[in-house]
Length: 432
Image (tube, rainbow, N blue to C red; front, top):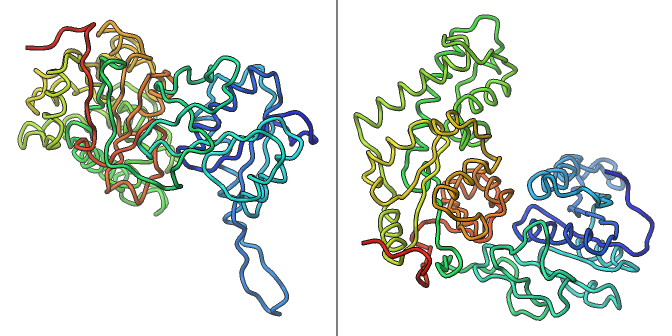
């Protein structure tokens, strides 16, 4: 990625770590390709200055600068994977007030795209034309701008789940939240649910089983530093390295974070396969002894969807996805399931690749753009995004809300009870 081009015809998109910024970036990439214009991505951060002696000597805290430098590469990786061919992209990270910096960059450009509403400096610009996106958690889908792009939508996200882009004059304030998300079965007759953490509370059981295995393994290894042998954290380590991944991938990524590399196999305590088998033994012993906790709203939502004619699938990175559904007494509510065992048998790429979600849609004879996905883990949400699924609903429980960033999705809810169902599907007959 190169440095910013001189002022001239181009598209400038301002991003932060919000959902609206992801929408804005996706749309701007597609627009840059359609118009054959350079794209400049900018992130503006608040510079932190510490007091020092003497008083006139200013010390700039570099921590915020380092964090800011990571924003644009991370968003491009999440949103634009495989979609930048033919797009001339440059980037810059600048300190200051976002509205003022974007107003300065906007002069002389063809189109300025921002992920949220900003105030007067941009509104006073005689040009360029502005495009604003509000966060998807605002509930309602953005409405179409009064000057649509030549193709009407971004080729990166062809329908943005059917969401149209918000008009500049739409009355909605930053941070506005609504209590409900919506699945319209006229448009999305198939719904795919992530099993662990959405339907059942088995994510906590997975984390506890991994902790037992990793802590035992680390204690038994000679020559490791205290940093390497510190206990596995069922919250931070699990969410960062293991959550939503196939067991070998999760084990590999966690051990790599401690500077440890193990061979994949064969079975044994010193291999990834061996650790994965030990984890499976611990996990299955737990759910077979104590059962599976089901989230209260899950059965009711599944039954309502089926009553209206929807077909449902469950997807899990765990090799035990089918047993989880059975022990949760949810198996009869789902028409198809894809889990880690299926992925291994069919040689499907692991999430965040969309192959597992695409296989679930294929089993229900539907296309991704006609399918809604409800997920909680970052890999599954990225898979739905990259697979261009029509509607992506992120479950962001309160116990994750203060420690993980708001996920990329069309709609964000804290509980399945916040999802409303409308319409009926005519293509698929109602279940009896």
